[in-house]
Image (cartoon, rainbow, N blue to C red; front, side, top):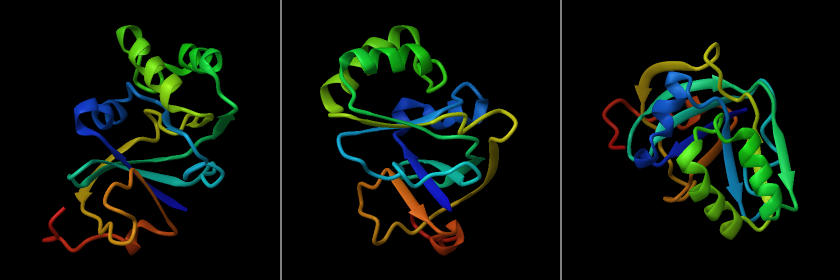
Length: 155
């Protein structure tokens, strides 16, 4: 299975993934939304900033999922995984506030999803998000080639 993780450019996470500074991709949700229960070791995740082309990919090495979260569990997860998800030090209180307020209970921590040895910068390409919703932040497809856009496609 292939996935496209769409990131907010202002957060700088795609650059951190490609540099190896961010070694885990996590998705915090109120409900069990994709990739919850779907993503598996061996799957491929492609990365892009919103409004830009896909620029990197990685193979999933393992997945951990957590539910029934509360502020204490959120704090423990941030203490354990904060640096690997690209947030540490001064960022942690802001992430904690966001997660504790907005997360009613589910996190998919794709543990070791990205690592220096498996993260690859690739020749950028666009995708056609039609049918996935304009605000989709995570796209699941059998094969990314099915949504690959023609070269002159407007992102």
